[in-house]
Figure 1 (cartoon, helix red, strand yellow):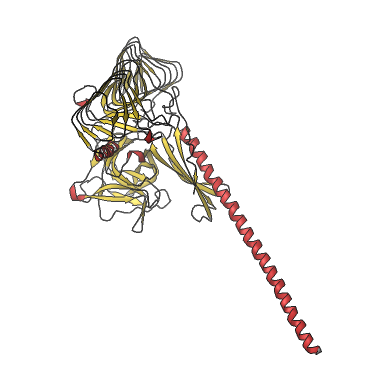
Figure 2: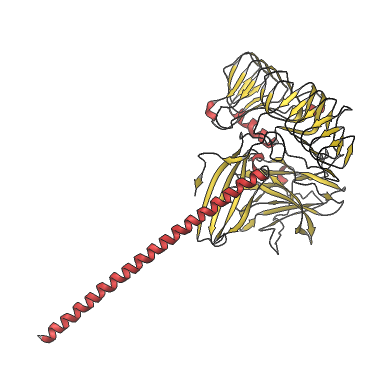
Length: 593
């Protein structure tokens, strides 16, 4: 009996020890899981804070650079890092996406992504209140521009004129390309990049070229399309080293705005932050720098015929590393591009009575000006400078217009898909639907018209007086466009309004080509007209006593005693004077992924 009881006690001891051991292990395991969860939560909070740091930096840099900040691949901060991508919905609105990583992007244990939409001031789709192309700005006598001007062509003025802000006159490009290549018919193929293609990390793509003349390079055009909505890409021009781009010799860079590119091929202009000098018969590389996104990527049109004899294309997983690998495409093909050198020196010149500029002046040649601040130039004649003079300054680079031909083609396609109205539209109508109108549209006086965008008018658009065209309320914060193939003429007190929500706009755009005959594409009479007007190949005569949100044209022509006083929140932060807007968070767009 004693032995039996002793054996039973031993069993009870083992059971008790098992229970204790299990309890201890359970407690330790629970504590470990709790510790791991707590650590992951803490790291997730850190990753979120890193992502928010990237958002904060992006907003600061967008405002400091006037909207030209393009994001960054990886920036180390504290225990981790963050990356930022910027996508343009239009030149006034950016989608900012920032991802925080712990401990780094290459081997993240935790990552968090934050996305916001940022808008600058009034949130319009334009950077400048007054933007002029190669046709320049022509001022007669007694005109006043209240604000700042960026012109890709000459500014010429008579007597008694004034500009209250800055005046920029860029070194305009030549009318024809120095180098170009394209494709035809079945030789045209897609060269996809910005994603992994059949195991190839095609993130950076470059096309080499050799100028036939020496000069300054100030614009390129790239035949490109997009899939999805990739962020803006950086375009660089580099020197050659051993048959590939030299990462240590970047001559200049600019931005390929995603908002200008559509799902169909189109020639998209890219201008640069400086205009480098290139030499005849030397090899240079035009490179687009992207990051991997298998849902949002690019396609550069390629030519299987390889008709371009002064260069070739290559791609790389990462152009900036020490031993960057560059590969020829398979099958071999050239990439469609155009490169433009600078033309004759541009200038800002006034009459003998001189013109007053309240801000800075940037131009190759300055003549008969009274400049209240600083002057940047190559040559100055009969002018006074209250601030600092900077002789020998390089010509400002030209600026890309905020709407591309590809945008217009896509809008016209959408309008035609809505239906076709045959014949003229006269008198007052309640609604202009999103359709193609094969004829003229003429409103008398006092019409109240609701517009459903996009509208395509193949003829002329005429508004007499006191008409109000308002974008349909269903468009919310978005904007609309009326496209006109012919001329646009307004009498007085005509208003083009958005929905009234947020930064919504209604723009009138004409493709009329004033370069062929010198006739105005848009002619506005005096008093009370408002709106946004765009004529990339046309002349705008803005009249007097009107208030415009934005004017963009190949040439703007003020005759006598006219005033341009554009609304606030539309000027680039590049300007030292005049209204300016700053990028800020659009409420309701903050998302954590």
